[in-house]
Length: 257
Image (cartoon, rainbow, N blue to C red; front, side):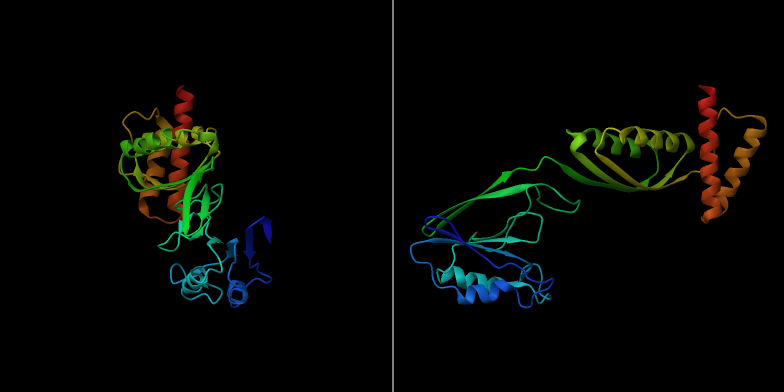
């Protein structure tokens, strides 16, 4: 496709879910050398020899390299990965990435490449276009309130919370006061972030109860009974008892306020 005088884009679109081999193979083999024009090859798929050696739809880096060396094309813009990434040592084969982040586990999303081609020279400059942030936070050794405070400080450091999605994985054990306060603060933070997903397996420390629970009489007896049930095992009954104890303590605090 001639996009402007002297510049062509050659593409190899997928016509099926898994074309074998990649359409770029036949396209490059049939392509004559460029004469007085610049050509950019655009293709989709994994690259064999760099990211994927097993997929039969993968593109060979050697194939692309030969086409570049033979003067058939001058630059290769690949799609499939959502992060911008250089494929070859010469800087003529790149994954273009995506202009905005679309998933949590992407090392370099939210960029576009500005490519200048002239003769034998190719210069690639990454331009930041993404406005969103996707972040993962994990802490699986929580033992005290300060451990949670470290996480809250990290959450506070995100500059643009309405354009930030956070996924947290938390595990450990806290006493009743720290666990209740942590859950309350996480609930409050959900209104500030675009998304705040929390996978939490923080258990209540049942080997002791806080000194001042605001409980007496039947409610104190119930708390102690639930504590003993929660400490007996890690099955569903224990989890239910733990949740019930947390609810009792929360209601006691709210009644006291």
